[in-house]
Every structure is written in C-alpha cells, then in structure tokens.
Image 1 (cartoon, rainbow, N blue to C red):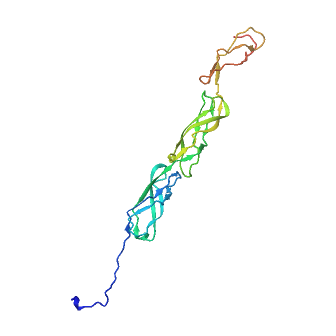
Image 2 (image 1 turned 180 degrees about the horizontal axis):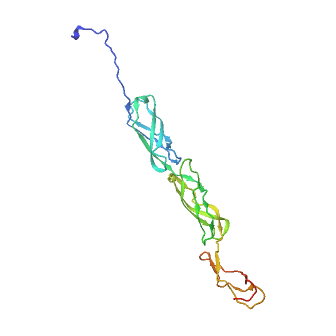
Image 3 (image 1 turned 135 degrees about the horizontal axis):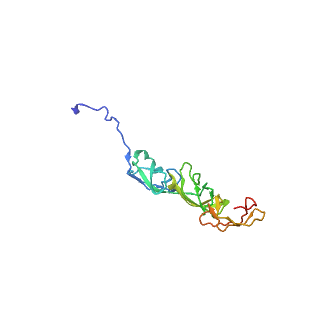
Length: 254
C-alpha cells in the first residue's frame, strides 16, 4: 500500500554508539636505567613512541607515560609497566592496549662505609684475634627504612701484647638483611680500638730455699731454676727475675 501514502518528511533520527577503536600496539617508549632508590618509579622517554592501529588522517600521539618497575630491587632487565596517556585531536576515539611494557636495569647503590662495629676488650691469650660486636653497625649511604646487618667481619689487634686503646683492623665485612642485595660496599674494611689486659698468673711453684747454718738472721737463699707458672699462655716463656726469701724466724729448726 506504499503507493497510497506520501511522506510529509523523508528524514528521522535515532541513537547508537560509536565505540573507541582499539589500538594495536604502542612501541618505542623506553625506561631509563637507575641506581637503587628503594622505589619502583621509572623515568620514561616517549620521543620514539610509535602507535599502530590509528586510522588514516587521524591525529593521535603519546602525550605522557608513567613507568613502574615490577619491584624496587636491583637487577638487570627488569620489567617496567607503562601507564600511557594519549594526545592529539583524535585521541578520544581510541582505546589503549591492555598493557604496554619495556625493560630497564636497577643497579645496586653504593655504601660509602660501615661504622659502629666495636671490639671487645680481652685478657692476653697469645693471639691477636679480636671479637667484634656488629649489632650497632651504621651503614653510610643506606636509604631510610631499608634493613641491613653485618653477617660477618674479622677483627685483628695490631699485636697480641697487653695495652690500652689498641688498634683493631676490621676486614671482610659482609652485608646481610632484607635489602643486602640492593647495595655494594665501597670498602669492606673498618677500624676500632680495644684493650688487652695482662694475663693473670694464679700460682708460682718450684722455688726452693737452701739450708743454712744459723747466722742470727732470717734471710734465705732461694733457687728459682725450677719455677713453674700456673696460668701462663701457651707458647709464652716466663722466669723469675728476682725473689727474696725469709725464714719464719732466726732460730735453728727443721
């Protein structure tokens, strides 16, 4: 029955959606290598960015990109996830790829030195080994919040002889703790001081007194050639330099 009608107007209207076109890939964005700083932030460079999937004649570019490393820890070839913002006249007509990634390195941070390691005083024991206390070690260059410890260090007095404030050389400092892998030591040595006190001789035996004829005095002549020392450190040699003996009284007796 179309022939029985005329149209007052040959136009009409309705609504529908135009969805954003999906971009294929965004390449050429790079992330800069960095020294460990305890964050996952990455510095990006978008100057070489290239976008696939833009229709002919449209103007779309990368306006900005924020990079985030997969974690804060030092390593080579770490994944950096990029959060991209599009720019250009037609940017609103396009949808970004699900994820865009690149890679970059986080190199270890350098500690200038380790201070605060102390050595215990000791009694002379025939060697120059020093016992160290590392619990209060200070790591110069450590980032606040990071956890570092000293797992090993060797201490050596300048010699094994008694003395006050004797130099102690600290070597072989080894890092431990949760964040040890993120740091290098510029120097694994340090120094401190400690005291070595003389060893105590608890007894001297083997000194003998010679018999004598009564002479109205209590003086006794001693022989120290057989003297023995209880408490002497192995390897040390001691003798009696001087000794004086007196009988209990001047009178004859056995």
